[in-house]
Length: 389
Image (cartoon, rainbow, N blue to C red; front, side):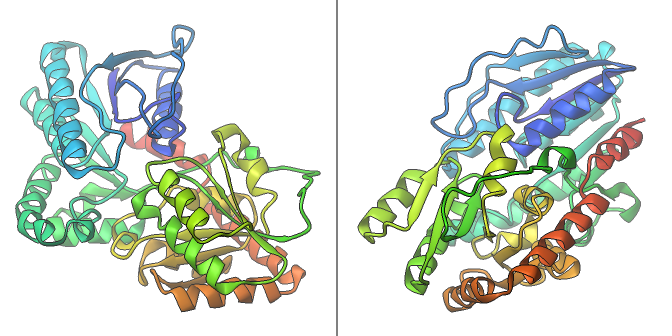
């Protein structure tokens, strides 16, 4: 079978969606002809990338030199989605006789729409992998503009998703939300959680390097991540013999560094991290922090959640209640949750985990890893491959 994988991000970009598309291409390439379409690598913003030689893999990669916008800017991101969608549609229309199936993990709304439209026009079945629900996940940041453009964008999203052969949601909450708000046939939406290779998180003999209790955030420092919130909460909590490590890069990193400088804190450290070093960095934490801005949690499930759980550390989450993160943390008993941007509530969690006996923290971490092994392991890659077959 000739399979086209459309991926908005792809290695060397250190992004979970990029790794998902890469692993899928490797697995499908064992018995099929696989072509990957992706833009030139730009994520995270400000990071430079060396060209990867994919000639020795069992799939091909074609870079589409569409417009890119790694900065978190609404107009730029919409332009990026339209540009990549147009390039993908042109490729599908030009090579339709060489394509039997399309899998798309691409930018929301416009790129998804263009890809589905081209596939359906050429009678090619297509699966859409939804990582975030747009426009809902961005509307809270747009104020009045969000209220004006929200309805037509939701209608557009509903219209084109109904044309896809199947839709992959990354949580049951997302599946239910899509079915209800997009009026989709329930049989068309399948839940397959994002996965991690659990074996890489089996880290032994880690030297912490500091006797202070370590709170840690690991991931993209973006506007939606709420890193500024945990900085302010940590400083206000003023818990003795503790430190906060923020590991990652992103569009809001410099802003957060300036915030720490302005607040004159010497207990907060910023470090960069690569995908291969994430397990070792997280192993040095006593508690892992997962904040999200209000309105984000109900339409997305952050990719750092399975990585956190596989590291077997307790998780402190500040997210929308009734979200997937709240459900998973409480269901697995791997940590504590408070409402999104509830500063007093989060400070209480910081204090609570610090005073928690070590054996209880170890139990929380084990609970999280066991849950992740059952629901978020690489077995989900095979589930996705079987769905495509």
